[in-house]
Amino acid sequence: AQSVTQLDSHVSVSEGTPVLLRCNYSSSYSPSLFWYVQHPNKGLQLLLKYTSAATLVKGINGFEAEFKKSETSFHLTKPSAHMSDAAEYFCVVSDLYSGAGSYQLTFGKGTKLSVIP
Amino acid sequence: DAGVTQSPTHLIKTRGQQVTLRCSPKSGHDTVSWYQQALGQGPQFIFQYYEEEERQRGNFPDRFSGHQFPNYSSELNVNALLLGDSALYLCASSLPMGLDTDTQYFGPGTRLTVL
Image (cartoon, rainbow over all chains, first blue to last red; front, side, top):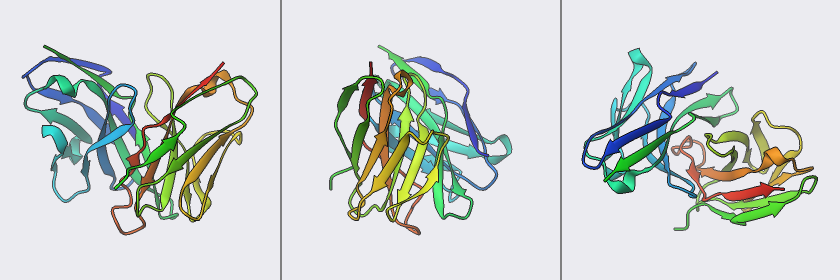
């Protein structure tokens, strides 16, 4: 069974400083990993996806994530936070579902990012 | 190109009632998944529809059922509503097999409140 642990429920940074949101995963196979962002009262927007082509993945809005298999981690970073980055961030693992040819997403509990002016 | 759309945006029901939520996938997508997101939690997988059949199901009771139509749109039905069913219900769609099929794109959600 797959699982995702987001190590911080809330992260607060000052505008212009780096962002680090931590995620560890567990999976029986070689999973795809995602980060999604959710702004208040909105749906989920895909930030980036890892599929094994490269361990450092670049996403939208200056975010990137590094896949480390030995640490089973997929941390999300951004060099300089902007006020508009304040939102909830979800780390997600996708595994192929037992021969049905379909994929099931498992979400972490989320990390709320606050950006202080 | 329209993204995933959901209706209605908000819904208020009372305990014991039944509700139907609707979802239209992105153009070119043939698979629809439904998720429940309780306040302050991550989304939980309810079920997935492909070729008008339920292909996978999460740990939800039979009160939760769905349907997929020939045009790939989908409905989520919940019977005998409980207070605990109050949540944001998210629909996601994905491409056919062999085409980045494990990436899911989400709609804005339907906020269901059960009184």
